[in-house]
Length: 332
Image (tube, rainbow, N blue to C red):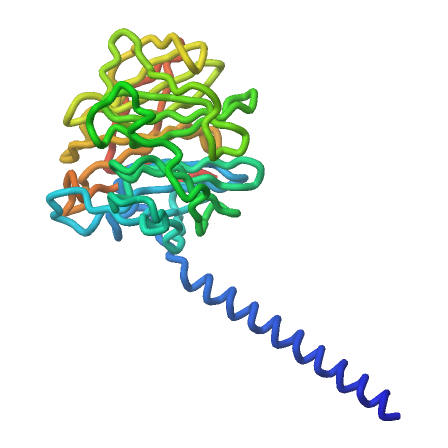
């Protein structure tokens, strides 16, 4: 009889514990939801409550995930960037902002303290965030979901100025952009003044083989390389000169030879820099960039991400970007 009573008490305890656990999970879910900030884009810039820069994006299922740098508040006189931000949308109009996924202090080796441009790539269910730290190199962090949080994957830089063999200035090793080709090979491009590229191993956190320099006729490279592919053509877009425009070149092979095709995007308003991302989403091509367009405190060090359409000519060349105040329409 006593033994049966003990069993009944144990069952009640387990049931109570299960209810308590479910309740705690529900509370955690509510807290997590409360950490999200939802907003509608109303033309360009698409984000007006924070200063954002250096956009990159990936598509996962029906969702576009936007990753940005984070400038300090307006009227700055230099780049003050200490973390990275992440947003998502399913229609290019309604956006969700998530808690800060990654900070420069998450990289103990990043002595520069600068959270410069980055790019996220998915592989095998993991998300890899490649980031610039100014003169201390390019790092990589990893997460289990696109919203993060991300953690330093190496405990050291993936690339440093020593890898930038043709450069002599301290900020040569910045602006990583990755691309996974149709054959599964992952590539990373980066650089300032000189453009470098290399294969990534399948683990996405180590370099496979030789680091090479990109060169071709007409290539006046400043920074911000980006690779995308359409109809078996490779497009290398990049910032050129200063103040920066975006130029582009095309090739039949990711390593070239590339043919210079001209300017894609003009100087972006009152921003000296012009950092782009290009993505296909729901049947349309989009050009992501930043300007200094937040009234009234925007500028070269207080930038804002914008999105406009990217269009192709019949021969595969790109039409000049038309930067608009209205931005892009919602898609469904």
